[in-house]
Image (cartoon, rainbow, N blue to C red; front, side, top):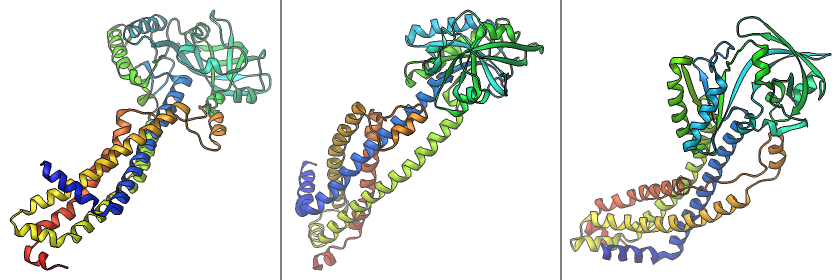
Length: 417
């Protein structure tokens, strides 16, 4: 085996220029794949985290059926005590976990001049900053305070639509949980700007205590939003929350735990579509590299036809000659993989520290309340995925030149010029 490796290595450098061109193509493709895949998965993580942190949390506990048909009556009893118990239990294994109870209903919001339909969300002001960034996005006035006072924070678009600002009063009309007429007058204490026009137009928050009184909810609520420190903490958090929800099932009815995949199926589908289009482009690059390897090895085999004929005449079997060609390809691919992986890691690690941006990205990011820079996600998977595929396709490309040697006829091969 050692002799075969030495022979394969020497054969590689018979034509140094051709070998270096092929190896350089492998290195370039591996560097590009490592960086692009790391950046792609980093952008997905940024997109998911920013979407979830703004309002929904990483997962939610809901009454069965609420996700498909969000009715006020589909509620969870003693929701504040359940949220507190959930947070305490989650923190035993996930110290950074936070939970916040909520209730939500559709209502008609009226100012002195205009009226609009909105989604009114009752929140616990002291717990909400742990699961949502909205409290920190208040650009005018302040956020809600505990105590159940009749106050409200609204989005910037809603503020313009209603022509209501901090200090103005808004009348809310809706239907209570028991079917009664729900109404109340609240004072605008803050205006937030989330960067999402839909959220700034349609969502307003009031204290949960006031919401429960106005909408005849008693101690009920509709959802418990849960936030964790990392996306990797979501699966264990789901298991813990599901166990608690199951234990409360007999008392509170059927409860479900939904992670971000269930809460935002459109986000998951968008990521899958982008991943598919990305891999289509990566596939073109990998195909070009594999074709380069095929061309190099086929030329090498054709040039050594006479040599292979002599070796075959001496009794060397075709499978050993084919194995020699495959070893040559494997050595080239290993050089490309090793050097490309190292350089790709260095590039990805640099931008993981300093961030990556392109002209115009900061303006776009500011518009949607996103960071102005993207950070590659440098993991073992993102590092090895692209180079491993390139390595495999390079070996596949060498199969055809190697198989040709099984059809080699020694006498005809020795006569070849």
